[in-house]
Every structure is written in structure tokens, then in C-alpha cells.
Length: 531
Image (cartoon, rainbow, N blue to C red):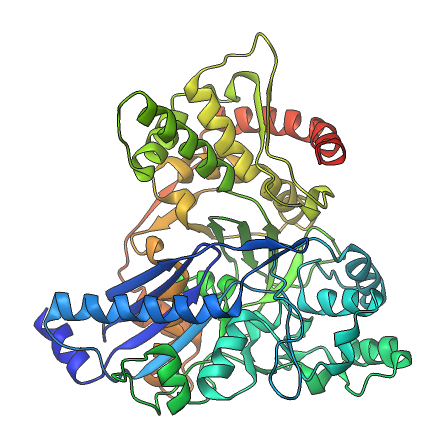
């Protein structure tokens, strides 16, 4: 405690802040890289004008509240005030569309990763580039706006992601970390920049529209982990901390996306390593030894924060439907005169799922709150179904919803493991799906057919990951790679528990998945008929 207190007083701590789908969280780490204090702010996306969005005013009120809670926690725990820190990192949900004009005015509502309204653009760009462009990527949103004839496109002077936007406002620098950039536009990992051939193709594609800009005029500059990305300005310091305690001049690392920070937080940035992040959305990352042999619309090619190529299977839906059912059960309990917290209800669902039949007893669930490109759905409808003679128990019900949270990911991962023969030495899990000790891990191992590890630090997630990238900026030695820094200085001696897949669980999940794939026609019918 005294060592951390002294480090805080001397400014030898690093700060990471991540804007996730449902929570903004700040984590302060000490010289030992371990979390010393944290603060958080809950928020939710809005569905407005047919699009999933967040208001930028909410971004700043949330960031300020989050930082205030962090500072209060520091004072409460260590008896000192939080002032200067040695470095700051900002991360956020990847992808999406934040467009500004030359006067820094927002031109259109923020279109988040959750939107599946860019099918035409994504399809045409994939064909043009011979490289998979998912619907949620920034260039897909930009090109769809062009195809739609949206008036604001001619006035775009800067296009960025949420992390790039916050970083810009804090530092004045229009830059982005390579991992987040790889969710905007394809990256050439041999030069750690946007793919120049595809940049030229895009410029030629839109040239006939007469816009005053070209690609490189409006996209942020790409930086890799450890590169200088600007310092906190006086205006930026007050945006983050209106109290005035946080001084200007603090260096910031390149802003990153939640995929890159998840890889960092699980030490999954080296080749043959992978991780699964499971929360509101679910995605798996595999750091590749060699390029994929073909283009797959189910697989995104992104990068680590240092620029290594990564195959990413991303699904829009994961735990939202589980949370919704937990809320219903909590409400029912309250009607019966018993009060439970959401964590208590969720724990009951997760742990009881282990008591269910391996194949869920014939129950079937779809967790689609929003569209899911991997299964070809532009919209989602949460759906639960069963045969009249199915084993309809609470344990099977819970297990079916946990299986549903992983099913679409499995469909994508089968391409990597089966068609591309990708080999992974380890697969690490993190996120809310793994909070109930041993449950999500055991079922995920069965779904993926490979051992899954969860580290003691996995619960810290992306905010801790971006704090580590901030620390790497100022603490690394000359020539020290991110991979070596994490392996030798952050995770050396870290404990983790690995669970191998149970053969019966594997068989049960495969049986469930077969029903799941066959039943997708019903899910599509619900999208068409339930308006």
C-alpha cells in the first residue's frame, strides 16, 4: 500500500480508459503493472433513426464521471489525491463512423459497430479489394453513405473511431493505433499502414463523385504500440478532469480498439496465441503465422497493437439475451417477495447450466438482439424454442442460452480450425461470460474443441490492456518489443487456470449447434414477420 501510495504521489502510475458497449472504465496501474484503483460509468447505446448510436455529450459526461470516481477511489484507498500520471491510454469499441467537417462539427450521428446497414457497401468493397470488408468497418459506413447519396459526405474533413475521437479531443492529434485502424480499413503489416493499393482503388472508386477529399486526407494517421501519439493539452485535461487536478503535458499512447486491448490484457499478441472476448458482443482473435489462403466473409483480418496480422471472428451478440432473462427472473423473484441482485441471478443461471444435459435436452435459443452478418441476418429477434417433449428444466434452459452465446462464434471459428488449419498454443478467455468461475470456460472449451485458459487478471479486461499500452510507451527499453515487454515484465509468473474440453460436452454442443444451424430459417422468418 505504501509503495503504491508513493508511486501515485510521484506520478509513477499509468492510466487506461476504455469506452465499452455498456460501461466506461478507468484503471490506474502501478510500477508493477497491477491495477491500483478503478472507476466506472454505466451507459447504453440508443436506437435512433434506425441506427445504434451514442451521443457525444454522453461520451464526455461519462468520461468525467468515470475519472471522478477513479480519483475518489484513489483518495479513499491511499489517502492521497490523484494528480499527474506518467502516461494515459484511450481505447474504445472498434469500427463505426464518426465524421467531422473542417470546423470540427459532427456531420452525422455516430454509427456504432452494432449497425448492419452497410451490406451493399461491404459487399462491393470486398469484391473490389479481394479482402473481406465487414459491415461494421468505417470504410463500409463511409461508402454506404456515398451510395445513399448522403449530403454530408462532401464536407467530411476527418473520419475516425470512438477512441480516435476522444484521443483527438484530449491531444489535438488525428492519429489512431494500428489495431483500431485495422477495423477502419485494410492494413499492410509489412509497412504498418493502410494498404496503399487498396487506398488507390478506393480513391478511384469514388473519384466520380467530385468530393474535395481523398482517402488519406480524412483518415487518421496510423501508429503502432510504443510510438508517440501526442500529449494532454490544457483543454483536454479539463475535458477529462474538470476539477483541475490532472495537469497538461502527459504523454498518450496511440488510441486502440477493444480487440487490441483484449489481446494485450491476455498476453495474446504473439504468434500462435488467441483470445476470446465475451461480453455484449463476442469475438475471437488468432495471431497468424501465415496469411489465410482465401477470403472469408466470416473472418476479419485485423492486427495486434504492434501490427501483426490477426484473424478475427466477430459476432454482434453474446450476453445481452442472458442478461434479459436474468432481469426477468429477478423481477419474478421480487413479485414472490424475494430480492436478488443481478450478479446473484446470473451466477444461478451460469452454475445451474453445468447441471443441464450436454445437448440442452432439446431446447434451442437464438440470442440475436441485433443483426448477425456471419449467419446472414440484417436484424435480430431473440428467440427461444423447444419440442413439446423436450427436457424443459431450468438447468437446460440456462445451458441453452450459454450455448447460444457461443454458437455463431463457433460457426466462424470452424473455418480457421478446419479449412485453414490454424494452430494455437493457447486460447485465453476474458469478459463477463467468464465471471462465474469455471463455467463459461468449461463450456467454451467444449464449443471450441480446444483448452481455454482464464488468467487471474482476465476480469480487468480492456481498460487494463490500454493502461499496459500506456505504460509500454514510457517504460520500455530501447528495441524492446511489445511481445517481450508483456511476456517478461507484465505476465511473468502470472497464474492462470486451463480447462480442457470434456468429450461429452463436445458431443452435446455439436448436437445443439446442428439444431441451431437448421433452425436459422425460423430466426429469419421472425425477422421478416415480427416488425
